[in-house]
Length: 95
Image (cartoon, rainbow, N blue to C red; front, side, top):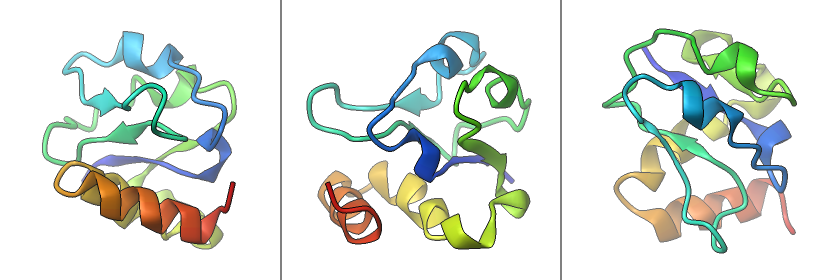
């Protein structure tokens, strides 16, 4: 299991979660990305990031609200194909 960043982070990108992550698994390409992403292969499921998010955008994978379920694969895809993840995000939440 991993944590997932969902729609409330889009165009907000507060990085408070990054500073508390003990394994540095939350990333973005500044100036390019519209949200942060959690690496599902590096996340250790500690939950430290969840309470730090000021917009309540971080959820345990099994608790992502149904309306934001599309963000689970987007988080994972970003680590293997950033362009595909960005396109999927744009399809869910156009700029």
